[in-house]
Image (cartoon, rainbow, N blue to C red):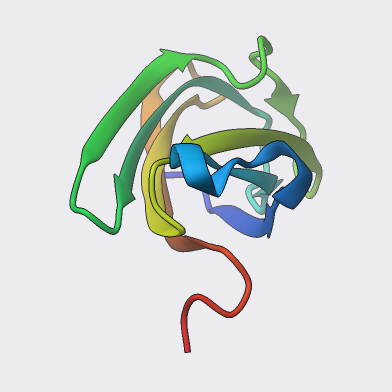
Length: 124
């Protein structure tokens, strides 16, 4: 079976009240929508993130599912969740992929395009 058409959308926000710039802790939330445009259910099995701050420091995060779940996403359905990341700089990026299983038990990757984590007005 060919790769399922999965669309991943991301919205981010800076959590000013949880951040402590003096201690180099910038807290960001990201809100993810995973849409199954295919004609069969798919299951999100695991995640892989590459998080890079503006100093070039990279962190890789791998784990089962998202927020403790391995959701099955039905055709034309969207799964949404929110999570967060802490950076040592006011600007950074995240990118990665989800490992998915199709209805036949075949695994495939759903890429997550790079997105910006930024304190408001830090990037012009």
